[in-house]
Amino acid sequence: MAPRAKRDNQTEDRALIGWDGIRFTVPGDWNVTGVSADRANGYLKVDSPQTMFLQVKWADPSAARPRTLAGMVTQMLRAVRKQPEPASDSPDLRPTLEAYLKETERRARKQRQQFDCKIRPQTSEAGGERVAVHFTWTGGGVGQGKIWRCTTCRRTVIAQVVGQGKDPVADVAASVFSDMRDHPEGGWTVWGLFDLVMAVPQSFVLRSHKFLSGYIRLEFGDRREGRILAERWGLASIARKKFTIREWLGQMGEAQKHGSEYADVTANGHPAVRATGRVSGLLATLGAVRDSLPSVRPATEYEACAWECDETNKLYVLQTWRPRGASSLMGDLVARCECH
Ligand SMILES: [Zn+2]
Ligand SMILES: [Zn+2]
Image (cartoon, rainbow, N blue to C red; front, side, top):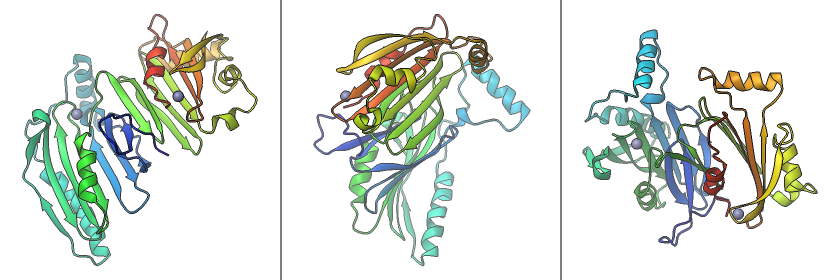
C-alpha cells in the first residue's frame, strides 16, 4: 500500500510520488508501475487499481550526454563555470506535444477508434516559472494533461491522466497537477514510491534501485560527497526474526565490516541503533578512491542508522560513506525518511 501523505488540509488519502525532482501526489491506492533511471529522459507510470493511470515523461537537457567531443567540452566548461544550458525563453512546445499525441493517435487507430484532441493555447503558469500547453483527447480512452517547460531547471515535462469513458479523469488530473513539482527544492530531492518517502541532498544522483516485494533499495552517489544507501524491509518482525536491530545492522548492513562502534539512539520516535566506522583494508580503500575520481576525496567515513517502525512494521537501514572532514548527513536523512 502507498503511504498516506501528511496533509492536514486534505481529507482524501493521497500518496506522495517522488523521482529525481519530479514530485506529486496521487490517490492513496495508486502505485508506481514503471520508472526510468535515465536522468536525461525520465519516465514514471502510476496505475490506479482500476482503469486509470498517470504517465509523466521529462527531458532534462543538463543531464543529457553530449554526442560529440565538442559537445562534451562545451558541457564540461559549462559545469566548471556553473553556467546553465542555453535555452530560448519562449520555447514552442507544440511540436513536442504533437509528436507525443501522434503516438496516442496511432494506438487509437489500431483499435479502430476515432481520435480527437484539443490543444489549448500556450500559457504562462506558476508565477511565470512555467510555459505550459494543456490538452485533452478521446479515442481508445480519454486523456487529459499538459506539457510545460520550467524556466528554473529547464526541464520539459509531459504529464497526462488517462482513463476510460466513465473515469473521473478531469478531477484526478486537476488534483495531480495542482501540486506537481519538477525540480528539487531547498537543496533536497524527495524520493517516494511504494510507501517509502525519503530525501537526499540534491547533488546526489540515483546510482541503482531495486524494488522487490517486501524490500526496497535505493543507492545514491555524489563524487565529492560520497554515497548513500537506503534499504527498507516490509513485514519487519518476520524479516528480522530473532536478530536484534544491532545484529541486523551489523550483518545486513556494512557496520560490522567497517569495524563500527554502536550507540542506542532514537529515530523518528523509535528505538534505533547508530553505527560509525571506517573503510579499511587496501582493496576497500582503493575502491573508495576509485569511486571518488576525479575528486580524490575517498568516502571512507562510514555511518549508519537502523530502526524498526512498529506502526507500519517496516525496518529501515540508512548507510552513508563520506570523505574525511565532510559533515554527517545522517541526522537529516533519518528526519526526512518518513516511516509512519
Ligand atoms: Zn523546474
Ligand atoms: Zn515510524
